[in-house]
Image 1 (tube, one colour):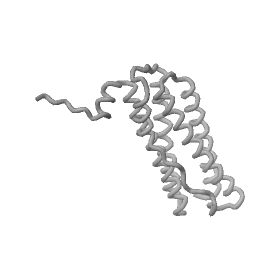
Image 2 (image 1 turned 90 degrees about the vertical axis):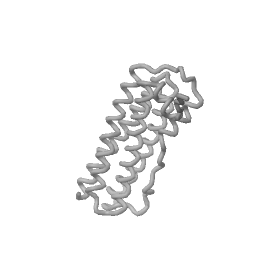
Image 3 (image 1 turned 45 degrees about the horizontal axis):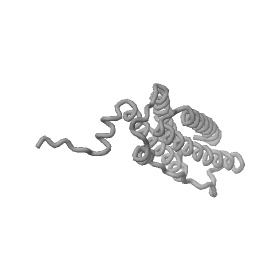
Length: 174
């Protein structure tokens, strides 16, 4: 991948991260469900951080024409599943979700799945080790979002089963 293709890919990534961030913030504000609110707010923060790192990267590439030496090549890794479990400890379990919550989660699953593939492809096309590691990291974080959203989808479609599975209750016939 040449420098022009990299910059083009970064522009696409920047647009995607902002679009996803805005989507998550909109749904955090829309939902009345505390779990949905906490999850959407956390993922929005992650997407903002991705955007900022990618913007630094893009600015440096435009100025220097090469992979930067000084841009921090790490991003905070957040386990959204932990947020789900911790939030559920502190909320009213009878809090209702609506069809918009489930629809938003399913849309978000699609965003994150595409993000995983996009960053994996950028990593695969990268010759520079630091560049490859950076895009691999972003792909892994998007995958964590994807899996967490799948977990939330399960919660919103069948909360009783979700609680049973996550709290590891055992059924003893004796």
